[in-house]
Amino acid sequence: MRTDRRSVLKLGAGLLLSHWVRAQRASWPEPPVLRAQEGRLLLELPAAPTRLKVAGREALLWTYGGSFPGPTLRVRPGDEVRLTLVNRLPEATNLHWHGLPIPPKVDDPFREIPKGEAWTYAFTVPKELAGTFWYHPHLHGKVAPQLFAGLAGALVVESPLDRLPELQEAEEHLLVLKDLALENGQPAPHTPMDWVNGKEGDLVLVNGALRPTLQAQKATLRLRLLNAANARYFRLRLEDHPLYLIAADGGFLEEPYELEELLLAPGERAEVLVRFRKEGAFRLLLLPYERGVHAMPMAHGMHGMAPADQEEPLLTLVAPQNPKPLPLPLRLARLPRLEKPQATWRLVFGEDMMAGRFFINGQAFDPKRVDLRGQQGQLILLEVENGGDMDHPFHLHTHPFQVLSLGGKPFPHRAWKDTVNLKAKEVARLLVPLGLPGRTVFHCHIVEHEDRGMMGVLEVG
Ligand code: C2O
Ligand code: CU
Ligand code: CU
Image 1 (cartoon, protein in one colour):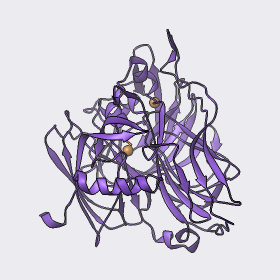
Image 2: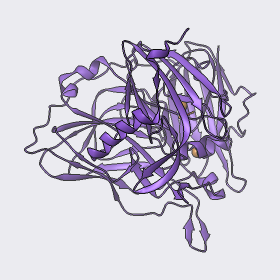
Image 3: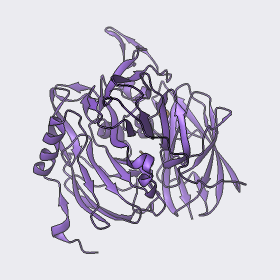
């Protein structure tokens, strides 16, 4: 296919700077949005070291398209995407389309794009797909440092359901949740303990900003949340208000599900409605979460361990005057009941803390080995057991699944997921309809664990 040069969006500093300046002025930061035009999104996206201001400090991050987080791609089912990743990093990289059921030949985690080279990802957004997805590097062994350095962006697939009056009239925002630590104006390097626990940063950012404030114009908000952190869990509660979960990783639920708290493990997404019941400023609080990290006492305290701290504000929502929220949508998507799996597969996560190695079924990742083999159209009951002492979020590419049970309890709602968190010793039972053929991967989405072996290969014929 020839690329029409004139219609390719080139992300030079200019375009993004203008977006950025506008976002700063509005005080609520949101990544620039790149929308498909007439069914096509043609885009040249550089990955490059970029000087930015983060939380009031000068920083040299690695970005997509010059912004942190990267630009939000907005498409519709059936749109054609043609994105050329231009690697201006000092090392090899690649791109993964997290959550999209597209051919593994395109979304290929085994591909390597050397420095100075470019690669074009071309695919059609699947019909029937809608939701909040994301893109990030996936070069084995390099994912953790590259993601921590800033390489991540959201991809929103719009849905006909977005036009339900209860959703269309809501005010929509994206919240990319991502932490960062800076050292000498650069992303702090990984310590040996970071490679065991997964790296967390002291700057807990929303769309790259520290504790931003959103002045709502409307009384109902639709928030798309993405945990794009390496290892930090976001356990969230909104002051004085419940959250109404309407969508999980892979799209809409069947109906809204009321939550007092929302937990997002690395890689997970959620869409929630906020319905202001009074005027005022309400903080979205980050609550402590115990994920079983290993502490190593050091001269200056417990280094590498998230302190078992108290709740802290992540952002503030300011309600409009005299708010009158929209009614809740009664019905959202219709999801298929998956029944009678044809095979049962079992995966067990394992840790060797001392060696800093991680395993699935006792083996570290080997790109040349196929760990699971199936046929397109098969329904698999996949049992994933966390045999370790830390939480591990299980993630599967290409084949969205439904969670049957987690930790012995039936999952509270039907949803398409691609990432599910397992606490220590928990078992998740997943129903996976095998989709597009090809070779793909499953792994822990604490990306340090993925880089250090907690990944396997699935081949569907
Ligand atoms: Cu978001 Cu294989 O990962
Ligand atoms: Cu993925
Ligand atoms: Cu893990």
